[in-house]
Image (cartoon, rainbow, N blue to C red; front, side, top):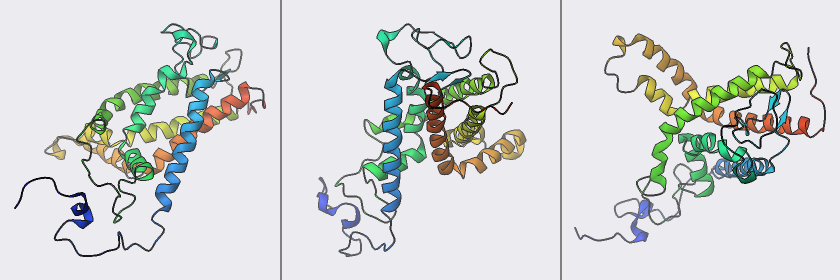
Length: 272
């Protein structure tokens, strides 16, 4: 067999020895709908999150702090009355505090196995869908820069746990009123409880979490606790796509709720 580079026309579905089918695919369903919807939904969230991250305002209304700004690490953060008031870094030249923390949840989701599939198909058409040939002449997978950096996903998982823990702390504080007294519960409290529940479910459904709990075990019978945890995480993992989208939407809605309350669009309805 001759050595050398295979012509681009002889790659993929056009590789010698494959069935001589002129059509690029034989699917008759609306295969293009899923990647299109994914691309539109991700674009909407990215545009919204970018606007909110650079807005540098209306991200706190006692007792709620936007999940896009928590923990607020810069000294130019809005005074939070001893709530989620971390102030570890300086003013950072007046930059929005959200830019200091979004890199962690963003890195976790950007390298997530499901989100890779979503934006690979939605934006890069690599491949557009199952049994549909991609338009690219070459394919190297995630073996080259920059996609080889996707392997840091497991490390972002550990950082995501820290972020989820801090957001849980924010939810606890959401049960206080503006004067710091416990016993408050408003519509925002419910929004925050649902949001953190979805964030934890999505985080724990991660493939890396499943591997950390049950990976590299030769005999599950010798590790009954880890086996039980692995089974629970496996159930969540089976719903990873649903949890990825629902938690993304809940984060956006939680931030939007705080923005509307902080900007004076309406008052937070209080249950008790």
